[in-house]
Structures are given as structure tokens and as C-alpha cells.
Image (cartoon, rainbow over all chains, first blue to last red; front, top):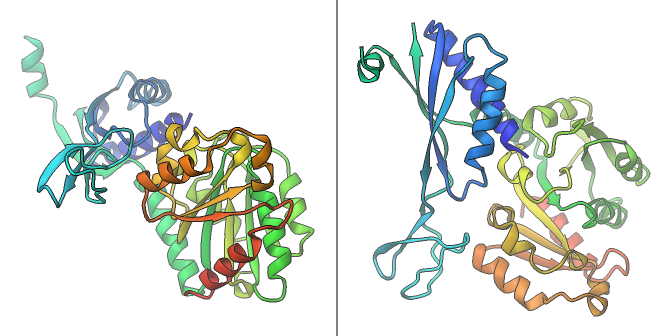
Length: 115
Length: 226
């Protein structure tokens, strides 16, 4: 269950940022999580809310998670395609593509704060 | 006041950062430190019981006199594996994560402080036995090695693709058990190469010693920066 450790890292980054901009309270944190990042959104939200409850600045804060599809580009067919089961193989020409376009994201975009 | 109006007064603060940035900052620091000292580093991962520690024991024994190895042993509890590695004469530090399912860069940084780095050519970090979580945490390694034994079943690449997608080397261990288990070696190789066509594959048996020469030769070349 590495979602707890990832949630801990989010709390660390958010606390630091909130303190730097003197925000009294964080309401929401927006994330982008790639389909191929190996992270379960539900477990991550559960872990984050549990950890947020331990911090006065984050108590009651929620994660707003945007899932990013796993996509790659086939140079041969000059088209994008959806990667199935981690195998970035073009469904048209069956060539393997190392040009993964998205899906491995673990990004914190921004947060909503109350002064 | 409607909910929409409330949100207007709620300032948005941009973060635009990788979630694991705190870990990656430390991992980069480790990588720079080791690169300055010309120490090359491997992060070895597998499920529990695939044979990581035995592979290290056999490798260290064969490379004695040719390489100075340092080993960081990650385990949830006990120092049993570190004691096995220490018995081979390699500098060893045990990390006990006390429940955590993977190593993080700050743990490795602490462990590095306990080693005499001036005497090392190669650092091997043995991660916690787990095919899921360690894949997400960079530890400052140059390469990632995943060890898989044929006794684990041939469905592992399909079930844990991220581990194979983010590693550079695959060691298939316990090949001596192949006649006794239902394991389709060709299927596994086909699958892992579909996930990651650049994966360098070694087939060996730590028990019989078959295949260990090629692996140790590769380790030697890797440590010498070839």
C-alpha cells in the first residue's frame, strides 16, 4: 500500500506551500494521476484525508483527482493510440512505440486555500 | 451566497510539482554524490523469496578481489539478510522500514553515511520484497534490476507491469526448477519485452551456479562504467 506514503508526500508539499503563502487553511488539492502510475485514486484519497485530519492547516481537505489516460504515439502511422495493459503497441501496425505521451503522471497542480 | 460565489473568493495557489518531488530531490543528491565518487549503483527489486539476497551472496563471492561492493539491505524487520551479506565480507548496512513496503531515498541517504564510500566501486541496494511499491521510488540508482524466480508463476509481468516497465535488467532465477513448475519461459520473455523491449535478461540458477558467470561479468563491466 504505497498510497499512504504518496499521500504523506502530498501533505509535505502542500503544508510547505501553504506555509510559504501564509494560507490558514487548505480546502482542496488538485492532482493529475496517470493510469499507468500504479496509484489507486480511492486509496490515495482515503490516505490523504486521514493524514490531513492530523494537521490543523489541512483538516477536512480533499483531493480532486484527474485521471490521465495512458497514451503513446506511433511514428510509423503518425497517430496517437491508447496503451492497453502497459504494452505501448500500435493497434494498427503492431509496432512497439517508446514515445509514451501520457499516463505516468503523479502531479500536484494546485490547491484552494482560505486566507 | 451560492457555492459558486464562495469559490470565487477562495484563492488558487499553483503548485505544479511532482508528488514525489521531495523523494526525487534526495535521490538526485545521492546519485550526484555516488557519481562524484565513481561508484555505480543498482536498485534490486523482486517479490519476497525470488532470491535477491542469494544472488548477491553468490555474486559477491565470485567477484571477490575484483570489485569492492557495498550493500544496503532493505527489510521490513530483522537483520538476517544483512548478516548473510556481511559474512561474504562486503560492507553492509541494514535498513529496517518497520512496516513500510518500499525503500525511500532518505533511508538510503542515512545508510550511505554508515559506509566507507572511499573504498567502493559498486553499491547495491536490495529493496523490500514487493513487486508493486518500490517501482515508484527513485533511490539514486543508475539502473534498476528486477529478479523473478520461475517458482513464482509466469503471470507476474502481466500482473505487475510497472516493475518491468521501469527496470533495465531482469534476472530470471531458479532456472533449475523449470522442469518441476508450470512456467512458460518463452511467454514470460515475450511479455516482458513487449512491456519493455530494452530489458536486458539474464537466465540463471543461484543454486546450481548456471548463468552466474555471464551475470557477474556484466556486473563487473557495469561497475567499471562500460
